[in-house]
Image (cartoon, rainbow, N blue to C red; front, side):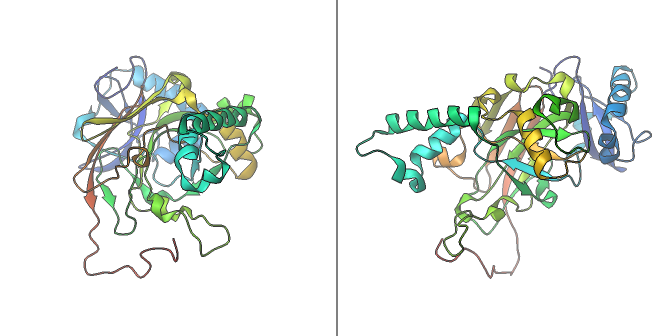
Length: 335
């Protein structure tokens, strides 16, 4: 694997920022960058007709033309304003761990059942769900996106900011009612997504539904990129998800532990929404988030994230500065 985290013979599609502003670019494994703004106004234009764009990008990536070095630019979120869809409870091990430990699920524990036995039963439920169940996702806001080297801003609302490193699908077509066996044709590529949230803001007892995803959408809570790697170069089942907090490994798990794979999620999403080019579907967290370690993010923390062949992220956690403003609704009633 190269210094930028790309395998030999591959390339990434990025949105980079330099002295002259932002531009769409190809990033090669050797770290060389090629500005492709003469072909595409921005990355949304590029993904709008991915099946045409990919052969041209592959040809340009094989050329000797360069614009500069990746290290000279700031990587922005690869797309500026995509629709966001996040998978819920989509890793077998992680979900079984949550169901075993979380207070809301303890009524399903058998009398006298040990943690080990309860976990084994929950893991079998996840195996059954993968065979007979249906995916689940929530929708997000592109205003929460951040780049791969941007600061991660910890908001004044929420006491438990938590990481969840995930594999993310980037769509390459507008499609409805896709079948799983057709879904790969509609996928442009894959990238890294750190799906940060404040889970202490999720549960509510003052409304009938009892759950609120607003804690997922604070500014910088969706760390995306640094680039999208075309699907031709990525085997999702072979991707290893790794996250270090201040140099300590917290997540290290194969993406192959997903309950529902990328094709199933794309098919499901296409029946619920109008999928569009550039849309992001991030596929759920592997084990090892902050709740698992009972260690949540604090100002000064440094997060280093890697997915095999998809590059690196490094984000420094900083406290949000709201000046003299005081939140009117710092927490939910009775939460």
